Length: 117
Image: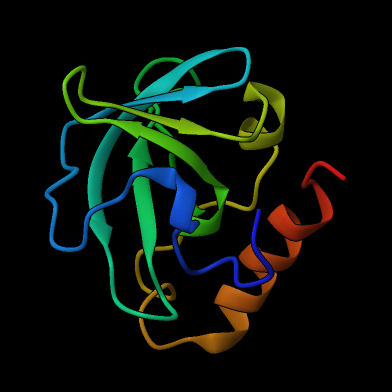
């Protein structure tokens, strides 16, 4: 993963402007849900994933830096995290995630601490 959690890795296969809404999201150990919305804003790119019944309808905010690959043909996004790491992530707060840099620091810090060496 890159040092900027809020930007896509050059090797992820992300193409600027691509619509990822509805793509399935795959953790390293299985499917976690679908992309509800996303942003590719420079320095603030993210995915909001609807986990469905897997964790009782919880939505999670994943910084773009957690994306390890995108398969446009299969409409799948692969993230370099386990299901438990995602399940234990800070709760998504739709009111804070836009314009609250402290919230982004909290989310980014959580995922930064769980990245693979």
